[in-house]
Amino acid sequence: MITCKYILMVMLMSVIGAQAAVAAENADTISVGTLVTQSQVYDGKTAVVEGEAVGPLLREGRFVWVNVHDGDRAMGVWMRDSSAYAVTHTGNYTKHGDQLRVSGVFNRACVLHGGDSDIHAENVTRIRSGYRVAHPIPNGKKNLMAFWLLAALFSVIGGVVRER
Image 1 (cartoon, rainbow, N blue to C red):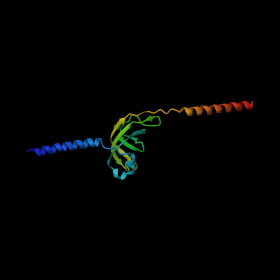
Image 2 (cartoon, rainbow, N blue to C red; image 1 turned 45 degrees about the horizontal axis):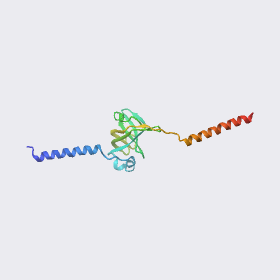
Image 3 (cartoon, rainbow, N blue to C red; image 1 turned 180 degrees about the vertical axis):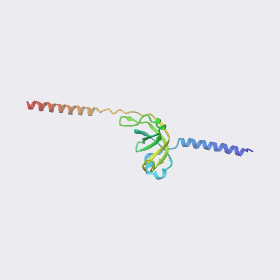
Image 4 (tube, rainbow, N blue to C red; image 1 turned 120 degrees about the vertical axis):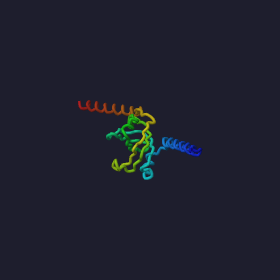
């Protein structure tokens, strides 16, 4: 016979389970620096890291490597190629890469990957898309370059005239 206490207990457990699922999805992010300095604490545990996808995507069978840079340090993230579709732009000198939120297991010394620290991603989400970065040359540098080019030209012309 189902009692009122049983129904209340099931409802309470459902609410607690739903809150835990939401909390896991919105878990606090950890900086890469914290993972490195407190690696023994986080080893083998799920970590959430946010940062820019930098460098090229490196394919390894059905998996892909990407470096995630949080503004201070970078960490290699190993993910299934199906998760790599979240990464459309990687950062370099001319581009700012996608801003990613990576949730996965942190390995202090990964046995699969030669003892390096890495994150084996379980969930990869693109927060913001990447974009091009312009690096205009300041006018002062342009003027200085024009001055030195003219000086070199006059030097060459002066050398030719002197030899005649």
